[in-house]
Image (cartoon, rainbow, N blue to C red):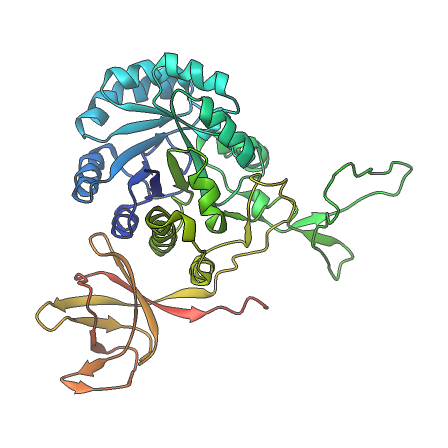
Length: 415
């Protein structure tokens, strides 16, 4: 059975992806992972992460995948005993020098995509060193992945959804060169996602296009000052929901969703969609069909448009800004939940109407979406509530005091 591996940037995201069917979760530890700008977890949090995940029968992998200098390597090695004591399952390593010490502490060693594993010979060497799994390079085609996996003595893992980096396996110096913030140490400010100005000088040099891609165009926008702007550094997000059968037949052990820096609702929605797709395939492979609603759901949360990365061809389309259908508007907080009548009391600081779609998020609740179909104030049914009020809403799923409440407002992507 293939493993569905989902990201957790904090306790709310952790609960959200577990509630939506993740078989395993990966997360970061302060100072040692590729998402330094995410909230991450402390060393003291790991036991709680492990405990919560075990409630769902899910495995736990700690990302320690930055480029380690001598000081950080020594520090991580010194923490292995405490990490192992938390009872998480394994470490995602970008440095093969720590495989032996990781395994000696009873932890699985998974090799990060940062190692840029592109052939079965590397996998055989990693097996000798003690690694259990390797995340294959994002620059491989699905055909290459299938061939490499068939020869591999260890488990292989691939990304199936989320952001794509402009650099090979994430090794990039653009952020460091511009801001002194290193992507290779988890501190990328993503300058590639910005809208860049394109300039050129007249001369005899000509650019020759040797690409096999016929339709190779950048979206270039003219400005009043005579310059031109484009997002040519920024690729679209990966989305492989239409290719579940091909992925399932590749022999891969784990399908990974990117997104530790993204919101809990993103993790919940994406995990839930791929969970359903994988389960549907396992139940009836011959009659598997892609549901149109899956893409609708994936498009409803943060995305930069979708592509299939290098799986079938060389990606060339550049991304725009966030293309999700909705904006999350912070409108309130849960005051109490009454289990007997399945109702939540909300304190709201924005208007609320019957039919509004809301999202409730919390460390224990995770992330749920709910359409308002019943509201009461002091026992009387209402269809509209003004900001500054307390209102009771019917909601079947249990929520908790102090959970955050958001209203989903339709985005105008034509602006």
